[in-house]
Length: 205
Image 1 (cartoon, rainbow, N blue to C red):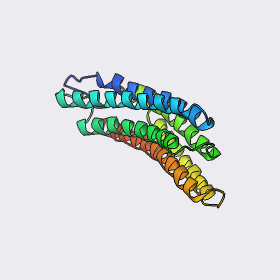
Image 2: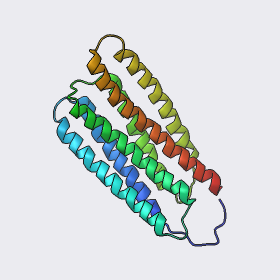
Image 3: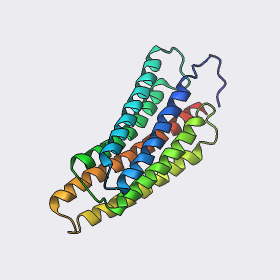
């Protein structure tokens, strides 16, 4: 790691950790959401609260970036990290919200698998955010998140195959595909977070 000759503002690290912890809580709620057919409105409302909390953290990070002279890492990379974490939360909340609005009932088992992979990615991410100050031993993190995203792609393709098999009515297919797309977007966003962390680690090495 490069020797620093200027002080840095370390207040960003707790905010990144807070954002990742919010994703852990949200994916846990989402797991409950996909496995029940009742009480989804309340669970979706809780996820909206998490989405608002995530927005608040993102805005704090951006404000700090705009008002801090010396940042721990490249300013643009930190901005991307904050917004990518926010993108994960947005996709999670969108999936639940649409499922409620479109009055979906029983969801395909593959969606439960999608959410399980999101939960694992969230836990990898919160652990990585805790190691950002030192950037030590982060390679296993982005390797694992990339692996989880590849697995999520496979689950997504299997789900699409099932949706277009003729087992569902056309309108239901469209509704379920939208939810599946949002969950896939969340997996992609987790990978984007990991890519930013890798970029930071390479620049700072």
